Image (tube, rainbow, N blue to C red; front, side, top):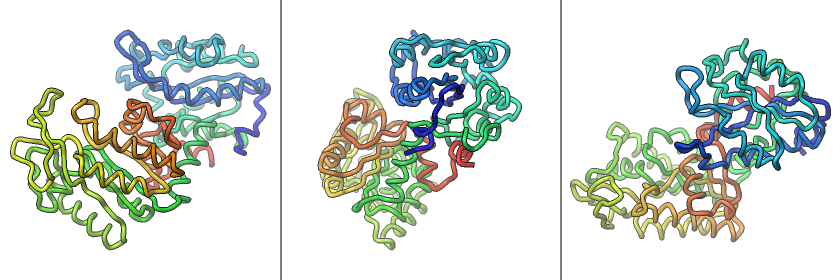
Amino acid sequence: MSAFSQFNFSGHKALVRVDFNVPLDAEFNITDDTRMKAAVDTIQKIRQDGGSVILMSHLGRPKEGPADKYSLRHIISHLSELLGGIPVQFAADCIGDEAVQLASKLQAGDVLLLENLRFYKEEEKGDINFAKKLADLGDVWVNDAFGTAHRAHASTAVMGQYFQAENRLFGLLMNAEVANAEKVMHHADRPFTAILGGAKVSDKILLIEKLMEKADNIIIGGGMAYTFLKAQGHIIGSSLCEDDRLELANELLAKAKAKGVQLLIPADSVIADKFAPDANTQIVDNNHIPEGWMGLDIGNKAIAAYSDVIAQSKTILWNGPMGVFEMEKFQNGTKSIALAIASATQHGAFSLIGGGDSVAAINKFELADQVSYVSTGGGALLEYFEGKELPGIGAVRG
């Protein structure tokens, strides 16, 4: 049982760092509330114990101080709904007199949401005085924002120094994120297959090298595949390619072979004559993509080969789509891989989906409840798998 689960919050004011950085449409409607739902159990545990909750989060990337489009007031009504219809108090400033007064008057079960932390540049700078003002609002600090755990910001890490070790806790979401990540990287049942997509090899170098120490199979898809293909001498047309990474791609292929890791590159692609939903398309083998055409999804041969490897796997990590799944003509590869992962999970495999685009894909294809765990952390999960110490985790553990 975690320290959080054992902690009795009765009489405490818990400052909870959540990740409510949710997408909003032009009318300020929340288009994906996954991150908010993920924090509900932590909030309700504190309330049910007889504690009060002070929620801290950022929203978007405000550059010049307060701006209405980045105000957390837009999420109050939905947050209230998620918490069973209870009223949610709101401080129009995350520090200052109003926040202090509202926090001081909180009763058992009350919830107070502070305004966007990033309205102050001090948040991202990790300013100790700003962190102290936030810390003074409560007597327990709960970090439940795995999505920002790789940032050494005031609310995600620096605040920890103002609380005794027993009053610094991971929330239920953070506990689950860390436990599932550690299961994959340190306690994986074999065969362990990692599926990596996305645009650039350069974004995944450290991850690929780390996974070579752990995985049996590494499946490559997305734009990054064409750098590997060109490095092997294939003609890739106008496909995305990092020409300055060709030597690196060959080094990674050689390293995988030396370690006995199967690094799979797609055999064929869905290619298009332009990057657009109405592009003309065809499926071709990846040894010769015509000039003026670009690969935007994996083809049927790649899908079959990849699905076969996934079906035989006992542990699966998926980070990055296989193609431009946002466009219907180029979503089949990503959808097929998602279905293969869901099928393997049903047959006993453990599957972890992490990274913004993979999570968006698994949600788009309505398969989130058919995999083992969907992470809320994009960059944080990547850095964790790369072996880096995350400030938000270190600050709690001390």
